[in-house]
Length: 505
Image: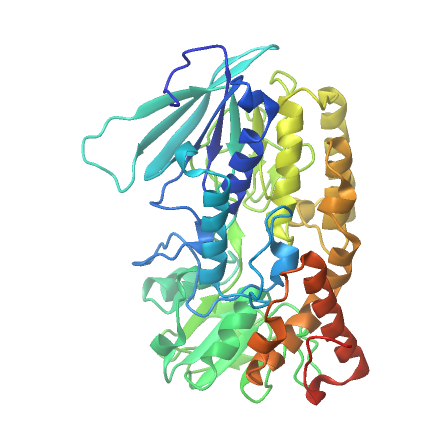
């Protein structure tokens, strides 16, 4: 049992969160020789009553739901690429499964690796503070309370050596700050964030603008068609041709009007919205901002990090170790390791900050680096790493004419091949095989993920999805790879309308 105060000289490791990141962190930590030899103790704190993070539905979402999960959500990546590398989805799973299937997958993961005993549920972390610092060790005090709160409950303090932050990136909605009269519209309920969206019927016969060009915006806007009286989608750059948006998603230009970014909210009663090109929209009933999320670490404060996001800085304040701009945490070696010169290596990790990524295997390889550092298999020149990270930020600021906000927004961005190169780099630092953890086919499939998803939707419309995936995966991962390659080959041949087959024999 993990006691609040140390009862031995064992290294004590706390994981914050029991969503996908926290689960793979737990699984990787307890698989080590150090844990098996009882040299480490491991605990995870989870605010909710069950595992799953954003994949766990919130039965009463309200204005501040615990997950952005909407009713119709399916994955936007094929499950063979998004699965943890040592735990595939069951055979015959739809290529793009519903959220409920992903939740069941995570529950099976917990059962398969016996993770439940390590998770303290319904436990809200109120603060994490460094207690003692030194060149040979560090101590952190974690303050927790029950969730939902219990009146007059006293804080419980837990002392640990290592913190692993795994609370995800989807807990604090981001709204643009440069729109005039935003607060007026939000105050009367005419503005919301996609985090609160669940299904389209509440927008029946309304004129709706969906702001954004990411997965949520591309899911929500077509779902409103036929229910809302009119649907706009506001994006920074519009390059639509033949009903295909900039992200390659099918859109009916007659049903969804692509428009420029919003500059100003006008008269509330008349529903006036002014775009940045001067065009005026009237009769707008509601605006849904599918504009992403701020990095949120409400349990941290000085000296670790500033308490509230500061969008005007790329570097920490003099008295803080990190800056949280909302879009980036800096400086972190390899986007995950806190290495101030007075803090021993392996004291503090943050998982899953880069985007857009394939999150499960990405965080999985990060966890291998966590255990390699904690076990002493990987050593780093902390001063050299800090210098390198700062030099990279200086270069990025030069690229963006010293615009700290733009540098912050781009700092954790890993478009295209970069995330796979990063995973290979991290694998090479550890004792895991890069070819196993990052097989070549993943790059190929990821590069064409939008085409593949569009083709899969066509397969579903024809009612052929269950037949196409029946028994696929029974013989191993290669069967899924072969299926995806066949679908892509059909796309290349222009044969989508000729029917889909499971084999080419």
